[in-house]
Image (tube, rainbow, N blue to C red):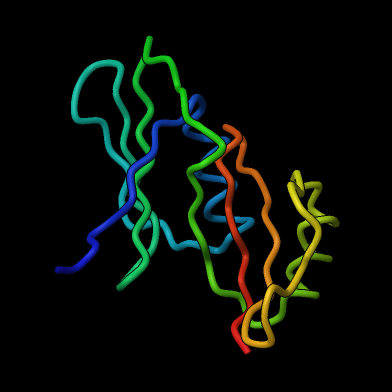
Length: 119
């Protein structure tokens, strides 16, 4: 079995595309409207695909128990970059084992994103 993509509903497509493309660096694959009041954007290439969906009148809801993780080359550089860009940082960096370090940020809708450095 292969994961094709992760889908999330967002309140503001432009704001979310800016976050996932400009801040996290996911490449825009395609963006389109499948019908009135609905817009979809796919970001990422290869193994990492993210589908953002924005639907007029849809109430975006989620829980704090949902998150997605992205591997970064340097946790310290990523942490400083997120601070510089004014991204909401949900946790400070920490290392629960000698093999991994990470911290959480939040996207414009409050979804938790885990930035991870594997050692």
